[in-house]
Length: 357
Image (cartoon, rainbow, N blue to C red):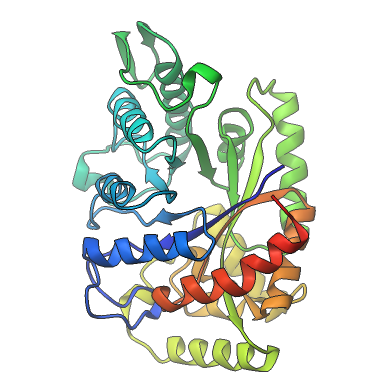
């Protein structure tokens, strides 16, 4: 199975995201384009574009970046409740068609500033039920004509999306990524998603979840192609082991002494995030080079655990995830501009030496 390597574009107006010291151009289309083109030039397939209320609209940014690049695949996050499924099916199909099939989609069920855009559904179980319905209807709208649907959350009458996504006539539609570690989330992933994303958990935790999701998909009668798996994590790479750990420890020390709200504001208590915070009880370094200390001070998500080491060491750690079935890798480190080149040149070349396309 082919592998996908994606970078990350923070997509914030305010500088300083996860300690990035870039000031000039931050938050502009030119800067985002620079990152996207650098991703193209240094071996990345595309990038996850950060999302959240109060940021630039992710779909608009993705459309602009697709127009300014050639091979770059934007991974666009969206929330059911922010979009109606018919609107999203149409917008995403259009971007996918215009870009020649480069759109990737990340479906997010977790709470944002929902009241700011009128989403009144806060119960987690109901949100995942709504996500399941959203995914089912979007797939139908991408592939069928005159869709009439009456669900618990959404309804359409005689709806046809035009144009279709790129390659629909050959059975292709945009890949749907999905995250979440609760029981309700895993049921949605096991039956409706194309790729289940994991945060940077140790190998034993990822192995456990891969096995459970595969079993769950079989028991629930998954009708789609087999579920694939992805890893979203920070990778701190330097020329030597010593340099990498010195840099990692210096970053954590700076985080510990910072009052920057961007480093602490995202401390959610969703199931998957709590699993990461709990790792500090097991040790500061797990497996070969999974660093848990950032989670004591960082903003959560991909900033909670880091893979730290030389390019050979981090590549070896990522190959271990690959042996468990992970084929989609969304990596990053700050500052984003130099690291997209460093990690692309040093890390991806090593991974592809062992895993030729």
